[in-house]
Length: 49
Image: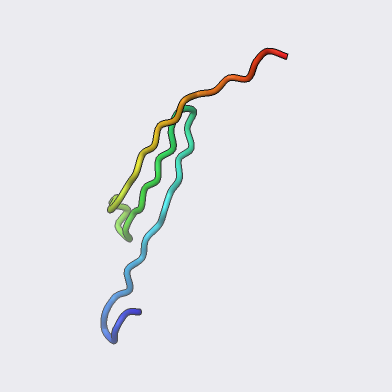
């Protein structure tokens, strides 16, 4: 909680789900990225049915 006369920090989180990876980014009030994480995963194809 912000003290008297201090601005409260505001952040926005974004999740980008792609075909082969997921990316998570946190932005500050000026739209500058402050943290991110990127995770790749193997594309899986179901058998023809």
